[in-house]
Image (cartoon, rainbow, N blue to C red; front, side, top):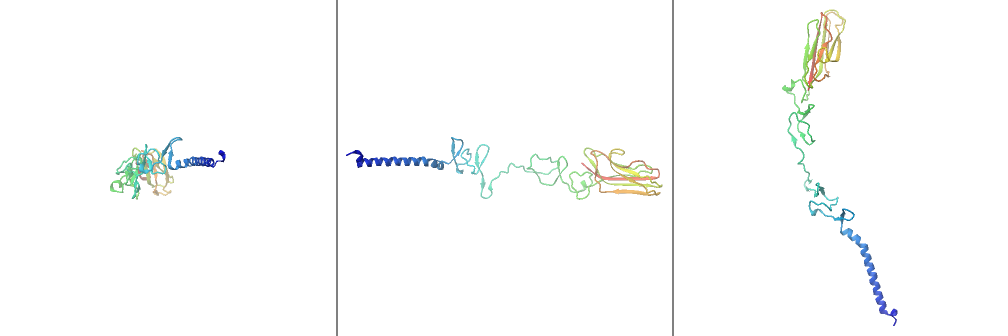
Length: 273
């Protein structure tokens, strides 16, 4: 019997072929299936091209330094990651212990270095510090400065006036307030009377300075209308003429009057600190 015609040989060769084919199929299955299985079972976060860290879940606890997915509720504390804290009633916990508390109101309160401090009562800035807002009272109602006070009525004012003898120029000055104090003119009254016929106009000045000096802020002309014994007065209110710091303010006639004339000036105003 020839070997190639033997049924036994055919069976053996057939079995070997099946085994080889089966091995090839299994090997192919492993080669095809391995990447998929390793990617699904070994879910990891790439730290580099050669190093992978297995992903961890919240049950692992705090102080985790690797394997954290961006979707996890963790926050970085500067060295490692901690789970975000919260509760079912209020949700996420927020630390407010580092926010500065409120400030007890007091005058001369300096501007804070942080925006977290709170001034719980009304305050007014005086140019350097904060003061409590005053109400109109007997004390500040007679004061001639407006520091720390907001009025619903007109500010308290000072007044200076002068009515000299015939033939003398009328002049009234508010002395310097010192430091940064400025005078503000709010109203003026100027009067001129001459017992003789006088057609020459008389000029008066509001000065940012002392008598006969300083910048002229405003001027007026008056006359007796060319009538013996005639008179003219100017009363202006609602002014807000502000002078220079630490400077007097003066209302006066520019020159001496004739021997038959009389002059009078009154200046009112307030002062800012």
